[in-house]
Image 1 (cartoon, rainbow over the protein chains, first blue to last red):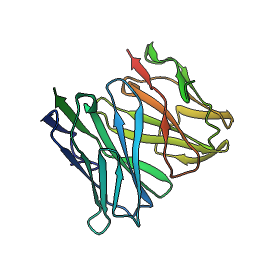
Image 2: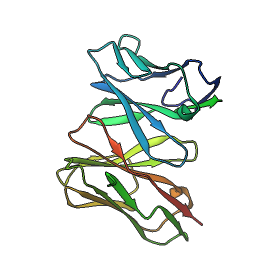
Image 3: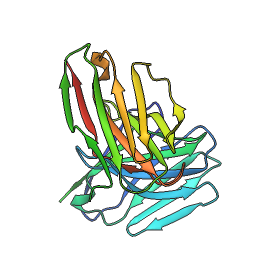
Image 4: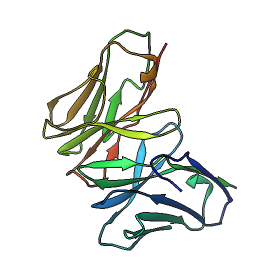
Length: 109
Length: 112
C-alpha cells in the first residue's frame, strides 16, 4: 500500500488477472486522485473520487474510498500488458495534492 | 498538440551553475504546479500558482524561484545547483485548484 513514508510497492501479475493496490493518508481530504505513470513519462490522471463518494468506476478501473479508515483502493480488472506502470494516489486537502510513493505494477503477457 | 510542455527534457550541468526550466500549458487552466520526483519516485509539490499568483510554496530552498509571466507559463529557475537537486521535475496544470491535474513530460536534471 502507499503511504507518505513507505517504500514503493511492486506487484507482478499475469495478463487477465485483477490488480489491486491500496493507498492511505493521514489528513482530512476534499478528494483523492489516482494517476498512472509509464516509465519515463509524466503522470496521467485516472480517476478522482470526492470525499463524499465511496466508489467510482471508469472502464476497467474501480476506486473505493473509506474516509473513516483514511484509505482508498484501485482495482484494475482483466489486466493487460499495457497496464504495466506505476500507480500513484494523491490526496487533496489543505490546498495541495500530496502523493504517496506509488505502486509498480508489472503485467506479464 | 501537447497540452503541458516542458523544456528542456534533459539537463546535465555542473554543481554551482544556474539553470531554468520552462513550462507552458495550452489548456486555458488557471492553476499551475511544479513537482519534484526523486530517484525513489517520490513526488512532492514544490510550488503552485493560481492566475499568476503564488499560492503554495513548500519548504523548498530559496535557490529555487518560480516565475509566472502569464497564466499559461510557469518557469522554474534554480541557482547554485547542488548534487541533491538531481531529480525529475514535473510541471502540471489544472482548471481549478484541487481538480484533475495534467502533467508535462518532465525535465530530467542531473547535477555533476
